[in-house]
Amino acid sequence: MDDFAKLSIDSYLDQVGDRTPTPGGGGVTGMAGALACALARMVVAFSVRKKTEPAVRDQMETTARRFHRMDQLLRALITQDATAYADMTEAAASRRLQPARTSPAHAAYNGAVLAAATVPMEMAAIASNALSTMDDFKTAASHYMLSDLAIAAVLADATARAARYTVGINARELSDAAKRAELLVNIDDVVEHCKRHRESIEAFVHNHLESDSAESR
Image (tube, rainbow, N blue to C red; front, top):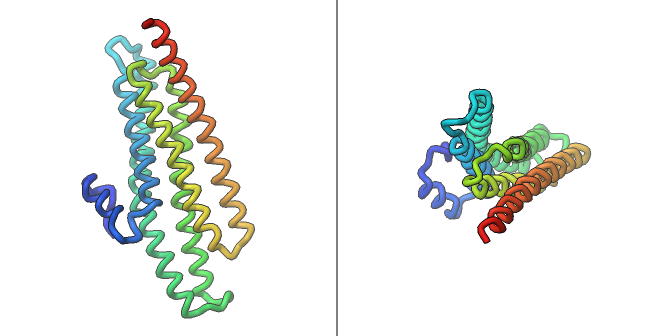
């Protein structure tokens, strides 16, 4: 399995557009999240000034490291998503040869499906943490970088919403109804959490832009 995070942008986009199952929606979801975290880290970098107090600078550097760590995790999940899909496809082929619900192949398939659903759940959880961090940081961000922070927030929110589709399509394959319901409730909670933080960030940015516009009249 290729490490998709190591591909050039051109190569990755070409592979997404090819008639191949991966990289597909799951990988693109992870890429959106990684872009959100990278962009947020840029906002932090430009928000540190020469006159920034040492304590505030340390806090910003900690925030930047958090975004970098989340970015790295999402990059890894891009390839993990493709691996999980391949494992699920292989398990599905084995299950067709042993269709009985009590067969080892059936149990293996359910395990593979759960693993495939776990990857987008992790993507959404990271996006949720990223949005919480952006929301906490927004008042310290450079006013010149607020549009970039809003874009990062929109991408992170889209990451969770997109992950919801992958979780949903995989969860319906689970024979365990309780586990299926648990996954859907969890992802819905994460999506709602992301929405609240994205709205908070966008409202802050819009208010600032409107204030600047009024002052310039």
